[in-house]
Length: 265
Length: 326
Image (cartoon, rainbow over all chains, first blue to last red; front, side):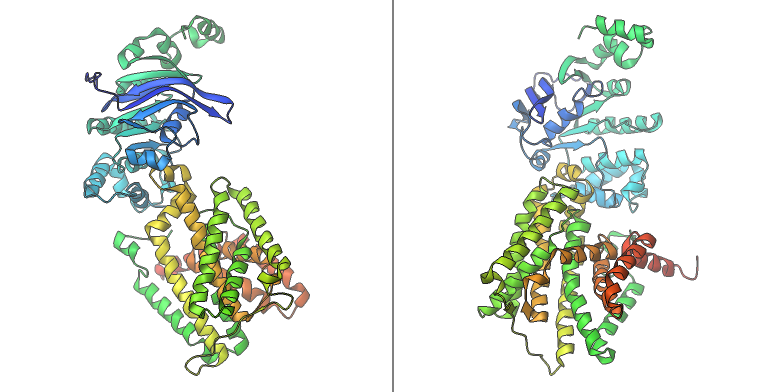
C-alpha cells in the first residue's frame, strides 16, 4: 500500500478550504489535504469534527461552499461545481446512510449506477461487482429496503463502482455493521483498491480504517490536526490513547480530563 | 412491488398471459359500454376518462417524483382556458389541446422552481398558493375568463354516426388509453427511474449523476402537461368555462384521487379518478349527506387499504396468481 509515488501530483488536492453552515458556523476551517492516486486514505476524527462535511464539500453537495480555498481534482478545479458534474469527473460519494433507492430492486439500484454510461465495459463492471459481492446477484430482484445493513452497504459500494470512479469516497462504511460484516466490507475495499481505484475513507472505527489505509489524517473541529502514514499514526501515543483505546489512563473520567490537558493537539 | 423475474419481462408493458387476458377483457367491456350502459352513466364514464389523465399526471409528480402539489386546479384552469381561447381563435381542436398542454407545462416549470429549494409541506403550501392565485386572476380578469357569461367552447360533432353520448365517451376513452400507455412508458424509461431516484434519495441521485434541477422541473412539466390536456378535454366536455370550476377544492379532490388510488401507480390513478367521481354520484340521492359519505369512504379505504385501491388490486392479483394453492 505504501508505494512511493509521492512525487507525482496528487489526484485530489484541497488547500485551505472553509465551509460554513448558515454563513456563520465554521464546519471546515482552513483545511488542507491531498490524496495520491491508487492509495487508500483515511480521515479519522470524533463526532462533529467535520468529516462528513469534508466529503460533502468535495462532492459539491453543499451549495455555494467552500467559501474559501481550492479543491483540485486531476487538474480540474472542482469547488462549487454541481454534484452531477463532480460525479461525471469520476468522484463518487457513498453517503453515511448508504443512499439507496429503497423501493427499487437491487438490480434497478445497480442500473441507476450506470446512469449516463454508454460504453461497452458495462458488462465487465457488473461482473466485477457480482464477483466482489456475490450476495447481490442472489438478491437482484429484492427491494433494496429489505436488505440487511451489510448487504445495503455492499449494494451502495457496488453501485458506486459502476460509475467507474477514479476517487471513491466512503462515509463510515462500517457504521452499524457486525464486526464480521465490517471486515468483509473492508476486504472488498482492499480489492477495489488493488483494482486501481483511489479511496478516501471517513471512519470512526480507527483500528479498522488504519489497517487498510496507507495514509491517515486526523480531524478535529474542522482542521487536520495530525497526519502521517498509517504505521506512524498507529504508533503515535495520542492516537493510541484517543482512537485505538490502548491507553489505560483514559479509562476513568479523571484520567480523560488529565489526558485532554496533556494531548499535543 | 410486483414479482418480476427477468429484465426482459420488466420491459414489457403486459407481462403475463393472465394479465393479457384481463386487460383484454377489461378493454372489451369498456369498448362495449355504450351498448349496455344508460346515457347518464356514459357521461360519468367519459368524465372519469378525462379526470384520470389529470390524476395520472399528478401521480407522476407526487407518487413517482415525491413532489407534493396542491395547485393542480391552477394547471387545470390554465389548460382549460388556454384550450378555450385557442379554439376561439379558430385553432383546430387537436392543436388547441397541444396548446393547452404546453401552456400548462410551461407554468408547471415555473411552479417547479420553488421545488428546488422547498420540500414536503412547504412545497405543498407554495403550490397551493399558485392554485389560489390562478383562480383569483381568472375571477378578476374578464379578458381571460371570458367575462360574466363565461367562455363558450364549441363542440365537436359526432363522427361515424355515433350518438353524442357514445361519441363523447369513445373520444375521451381514446385519450385516456393514449395517456395511460405514455405513463407506463415514462415510468419504465430512464426518465421514470430518475423520478423515482429523486423521490427515494435525492442526495444519492445527485451523486450518481442525475441532474436534480432538470428532473424536478421535468416532472413538474410532464405532470402539468397532463393536467393541461385534462383541462382542455374538460372544456370540450363542458362546452363552457367559468373560473368557479377550478377552485381549491378541485385541487384537493385530485389529491384525494391520487392517495385513494395509490401513490406511484398508473392503474391506481384511474381507479382513484373513478372513486372521486363515482362516490358522489352513487350517493346523490342523499344530497346533503354526500360530503359526509365521501369523507367517510375515504377514511374507510385508507384504514383498510393504506396503499390505496391499487394496493388492494395488487393483493387480489397475488392471491389469484397462486390460486387454488395458498
